Image (cartoon, rainbow, N blue to C red; front, top):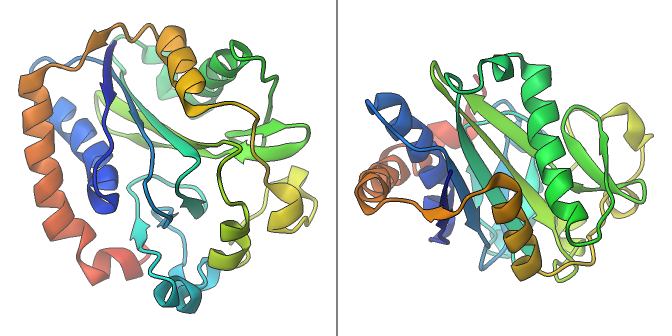
Length: 244
């Protein structure tokens, strides 16, 4: 597996994940990839089928210059920013055919994430479909995007430096709630973990055996596609506002 540790602008951070899976699907040969990035400012990211007006406090986001984007994967809306570590793994179904079953894909990816965090002394528990919890509270939400030969699994890891108040300020009530939430507010449901981004990154690299840097040629191709997607798709108001 190749490593891509690359933080870009807010919109390019999202469109690069999109570009990675599209590039891999179109290529005759492509490496599996672990991508890591750290948001430099707050942003809201809504799931592919999330209702914008219900899940997001649009007025607050606009008033405080918090951009809102829609991602290619499902799941609920999230707030991310400084103090969060974002990751994505691009995996080849042809090497891992058992992961075409969604429950097995979730289980495998979350176990890998939990295994990485155990390396830095954080003991976690999987809850719901694909959440990781610490002492009964959620700190990591995850989602996936499936294509014919490849799938992308990505998510967020909330670390101690993240401003948790951003969540209740920027988000409304989720469209769906996992049973284990038990109606808890954002403040009592979400937490952070006591670990540094540097240590968690190192643990993820070891867990996934991402020992080589992502090659320059496929990176250039993905970066060019990310720019195109950012301009033509992610900047399109219809992409943000319309639920499929």
